[in-house]
Image (cartoon, rainbow, N blue to C red; front, side, top):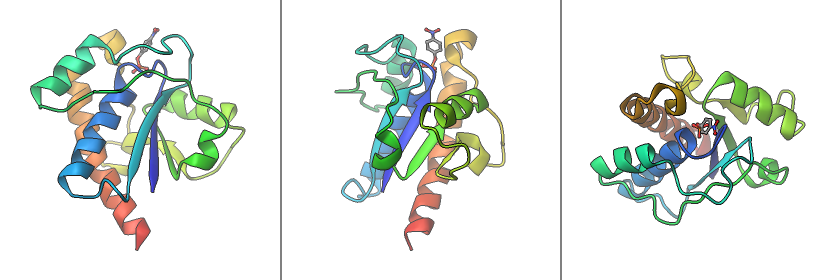
Length: 152
Ligand code: 4NP
């Protein structure tokens, strides 16, 4: 099973979700079964490390960002991944347009699988990386349960 998290810049929210999910998967001994990656709809930060705020927040929870570099979403991602998870509604609109997939259900908004049913606020603008971490953590726990249930 392969999961792709997508945001606008691929430096704040989607790398946070990727690192949190990989950590959960490693702790559950599922690294061979479930692969995780992230991408941005824009090309503004391609090749850059995750944002300092994302790195620092993950560091507080001893979660590594080693080897993570920003990349842009590409057409082959639709074939490569089973779950394509946008951080907010505009990400989902942009993913659908870029991948030319108006209604495939493997593309969805992250927190729609949780009771929150809302966007992950963008810390690039809010500066609140704790809120992003907390929501990503909750979303990742829900997504892991969903992936495992879907696999049965
Ligand atoms: P992200 O946040 O989509 O969570 O990575 C942003 C990062 C960069 C910019 C906007 C949002 N930017 O305007 O460069």
